[in-house]
Image 1: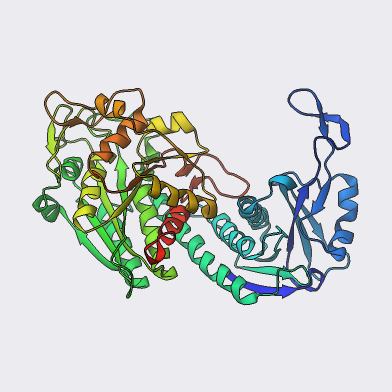
Image 2: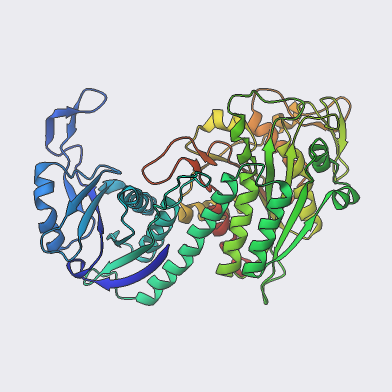
Length: 520
């Protein structure tokens, strides 16, 4: 998708489709519509739709739609007007962005995505999106429009023989003249350029997660990572079984040993000239390209989705691409532990004891708790490379999905300053994470009678026992763990994003790294 920025009067923009957002300004004290009520049976406020920018020409063009009630400002509502009066655009798309009082950059991102996904089935290949007036400058609005549009353009039907190219080829972001948003085009252009990188990197992650396991083995994932690194100027090292065993990564190898496909340890390095010696950020991802559960095999129903079990590793690959192109002044090492988890005569069994790279002994209770095993060695290895701060991402536990559903990912932290950096990152990324506990009691649940720790602590508190297992391999190094099991895959089509891989974590990882620039 090509992107460009212009400053123009909306009425003068020549485009296949001009997109404007509408907001509902109704309050609970406003006039109420007796024909509509909320879930409690009380009268709901009558919608008061207004466009998100002030422009007399646009307001005149949509006046009849607003007065008829066809435009309400309801989130993700789309109304298409052909040959809008007084505008040079061939069409005008009004996209509802919800309540005015809660209109933020996150809603701009979704509204822009909703516009693209509304236009794609109609075969419209180019459009222009008007920057809304958020009262806080236009840079953030521009960046969220670009991100939302790029993410919305992705579809997962890669291998359909009758696949039709419905992608939108070009978007123009329009900063209206005289609205106080077109006065610094340099900053706006920079915002667009940077966030095109971020949107494209999120889509790279989604492309990887979407691949079936026969077309993305650990070896192939390593090759894709190496190709990306060569393209953007990162150093990349790929290590196979001999090196993994030589480094005594017994936890990682124990997962890999049951598969005919070789594992790969993928190491990506970003070392910008002049960057401070500290911090060195370690981004570690779980890269299980297919997870059968091993000997503790999963039920057949839904197992095809287990190609997504490398979403944490894919997020690190996407984030490293963006980091290389955005060039923050901080050292970063990305590590992906890529493997299959298969049942065979060579596979590890419940009751086995494995020795991790750190020397800790692990009793295997359930071979389907394999992600924490590969991450244990990945996190410890990152420390040996000199990483001073660690963050990992993994589709780690069903327990996190039970706790948080599909709305929030889980985040765990052993260091308050690192967590503060992450919350700062979330303010810009717009992704939703909820902090979960790491108390001593969870560690007690995974104490083993025969080894140091067990790889699972039973049914209760499963997300926290998995996280506290990982904590054993980072010691006092500031560390964050992102459990993205419930959010890495969209279970249904949304107005702004297709069903399938979401690319969760990429934007937050990028902003997390940026928050450490210049040794902060």
